[in-house]
Length: 276
Image (cartoon, rainbow, N blue to C red; front, side):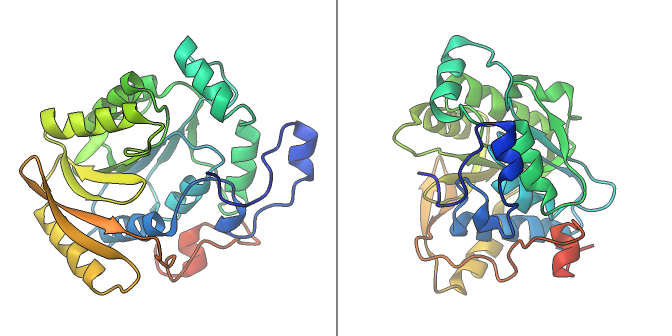
């Protein structure tokens, strides 16, 4: 269910009258503290190791996770966000899903939220995620977050696109892979593990983290990191011959340096003074 926050706007006038968010918790959406911790860990690790690549999010809702991801962008890199926003869905099934879950979603609301934290918007592709490979270069992304359709055929295609777009050591994150109302996401996710060589790094209550590249170093380093935290239980699990970390983060504490609004619209990196 959505976290408590400002109401979703249903008209341009209502959007203009809404107060701008001053912290990430003010942005409506589903991005739990445990996953904020993991996003921070994976993205910060990529920066510290100087791993090249852009960022990509498929499915943005009102921008909560996109705002977070935008703070890990280095000069010269591109952050692409793909979402239908107000556009018609490509098929009847997807239209029903959009009307049921995201009827009030607007691109203007996303942009207003994002601009409250960052000076510049990401590259926005307002179109079905099925066409993302026409907008993003192959092997150009180090981190891909998939949170678009919950329908099997669309998620299956999004995973295939992520495989094509990720750098050799890039990380893909899949949302709602175990939710009872999203069996298509679960089928597509574990199907990819079973048939495409996708290696599971870890899972939380809502998200799956994996890679098609070498993963032993990342998994071991993540295990060491989690062992030092008293707020996130973790255990070992083997899936399709690959050791995986299972995480329970019900008591997880958000990253020590959360997203805050900049009066000058600077990004998270500038705000925290820890990333260039």
